Length: 388
Image (cartoon, rainbow, N blue to C red; front, side, top):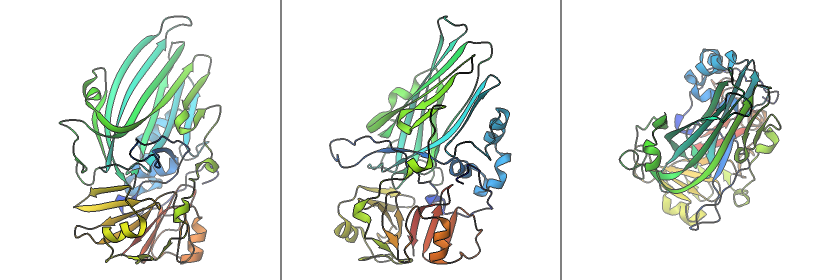
C-alpha cells in the first residue's frame, strides 16, 4: 500500500475483539503523578484500516457501497486511490472534504473505555472584513478499549461548502480520557452491550447538555483546526496528530513506534505463551512475578480479565483466572520462535511460518495454529496474538 492505493481483499473472519489497528504517530502527554513513566499517545490510523472496519465482513471490495465513499466521490476524492495513506482531502469547486482516523495507544486506567467530548465552533464570514457568524455545538461519545487502544478507530470527517461566503472556519476542541458521565456512563466495566465498541451519548447540539456532566479522572486535550476561503486557500491542522494540510502530510516512516527495550528478549511460542508463562496454566500472579506490576487490570467481556504489563504485552484471562491469549502492543520488540517481529512485512511472515491455510493472500489477518498475525494497510505486522 506504499503507493497509496487501497488493496482489494475478500472477507476476513477476524476475531472482532482484536481488530483495532496499530500505527503510532508522535503525540505524547504525561499521565498524572501516580505514574509519570507512562504516556498517553494519540495515533493516526491508515485509511485502509479505518475504512475496512466499517465495511461488511471487512471486505474492501464493497468500499464503493459505503456512504463515506459516495460522499468523498461527490467531493472529487477517490478513496480507492488517496493521495496520502493517512488523510484524504480536497478543496475544489467550492467544497472542502477531509477524512482521517485516529486511535489511542498505551492508555491505561481502571476501566476498558474512554470518554471523548467535543466543543465545535464554526465561524462564517459572509464578506471580507465582515464580523463572522458564530455557532457553537457540543458532543459526547464513549469508546471501548483493548490493550490501551480504541476497539474501533475514531473517524474524523468533514465536507463543507463555501457557497456565497468569503471564509469558513471550524475549530474542534477535543478532550478524551478516563472518567464518567453520571447517570449515563459509570463504573469500571464497559457499560454497554459486549459487541458494541462505541456509544454516542450526545450528538452535536447547541445545548451544552451532557458535555458539562462529564467527569474526567485523567484526560488529554487535542485540537483540530479547519479553514478555507473563496480564494482557494485552505488548511486542515492538528499539531497533536502531526497533520498540517496542505503544507505537510503524514508519512509512513514517521509512524513507527519506538521499540520497548524491556521486551526485546521475549520469544512468543505459538499455542504456548513465552518463557515461564504458559497459556492454559498461567495466572495473574505468575504474570506479575515474571513481568512486574500491571499497568492495567480491567474486566472485559464475560468476566474475563485483561492485564497489561510494561513489556508491551496484554494477557487475557478467562473467568477462572487462566490465561487465554497473549496480545502484543505496537512497541513490542520481541519475536516469535520463528523470528517474526512486529512491523515485518507479510512476505516475511510467509517465509517464516509458511502459507496460511484457507485464507486469502491479502487478508487482514493470517491464522496459524496457536498464533495470529494482523496486518495494517502497508502489509506490515501490526499485532501478534498467541492463543491456545
